[in-house]
Image 1: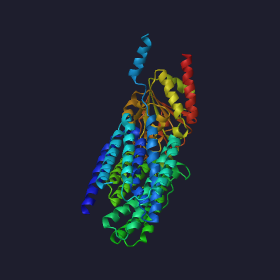
Image 2: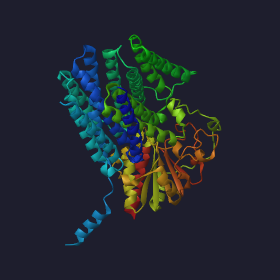
Image 3: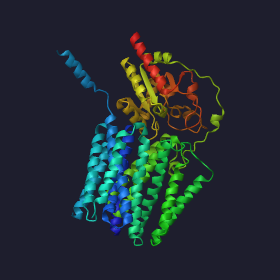
Image 4: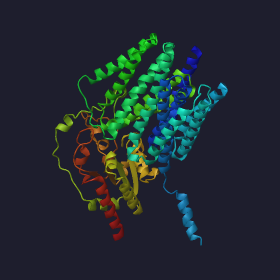
Length: 109
Length: 463
């Protein structure tokens, strides 16, 4: 029992530091998609909710579990879709190379 | 299915989430990050559905269907200006899920709950419920269902902290003796009310910090659930979410020059209108017309556009993009300077401009673009105010003193598109408007920028 708690705490502390270092590298350009992505990932509470909704412990836990699954599913489905929708909008200018290439293509014939 | 196999699936899922965030570090790989995140989530769901505890799929199917039916349309039809509201709402959903799982775990196992599990459960439920109502309040304020103005009264902080302390004290009682089932609803009620009270004193300008903070709380609540259920992937995802929100709120509070203690105790949103505003300046300002401005813009080599939230309110993003295009066609170099709090959530302005098809390599962060103002012929400010106020550098008594600002006053010419001389969120006068080099272009942002576009195009035709 104690060792399970210890392992859990190790995982938590290491994941927090890792998260901090990884997220520090995300440019402010992408902070909104980042938050939307972490939101989708926080839908991982599905893992806990699914067990409740499907385990038939008691009526209360089935009801609460079903509401929780609905709420997390909204986050998961909506979160990933909208993050992708946002990221699709981020475009660079036409790369110089391609412009040059097309100009040369015009000259060629 | 074999329990070890499920644990490996969870491990793979946790690793995918870390990779997903890793790939968010550049626009070129960011979409790949979303895909691996989706894969990780799918793995976790499949792994869970295979577990022996699940005996009935009926309600799971109903809930999955219902959640998708709500989530999918929201993802496709939500306009980008409404992004902060949507994020606030999804903090609320995420926190609610965690809190409900905690509640039902309590009633399933009380009074046989070990002290450590009960502590984690207490954190999960208190953070979950307070984030739930807090995020709903933030949603209401952002959606303008609720008044945006901060509501403050005397002793507010003592009352709020008192309620939180009471909730924590009751959790401690349950940790010592989990048989006091009757205390649990009281804890839930205290957390729900505390969430509301936490957001009441917060004004619109502080929303970027608040949303980040709620993000962090929702994540920590999920991590606490991981401890209750002894599930490592929940701990990993919750910790990632928690540190992400924490880091973003740090960045936001730094950008607004708030101390971190200020943020932690939710005592923000109380920028007082200080005596700096009292001196009601009657200094002269120079106002100009679109025609004059267009000529200066047309003759410039480098124009730096400074967009603020006012631009989004006026829905002028697309017109600004047209102006940038028109100028670039005339050989003018155009850059956009983005202050960290330009918008209602971290990075919001970048998304709004990307939505208007502005290429992201024209968007520059404050630290990168600040040295360039000295070389700029024109700084064109559209809908931004406090983040351009030189008082932040010079006037020690000013409420925004010390706040990092965009160095627009170093440009050759400053143009400000603004409705009136009304002060910004900080409630103070902007010294910038009285400089000799500043021209005020009074009018609605969208209408004024539209005029600028047509004047610049006319110059192009004339030439």
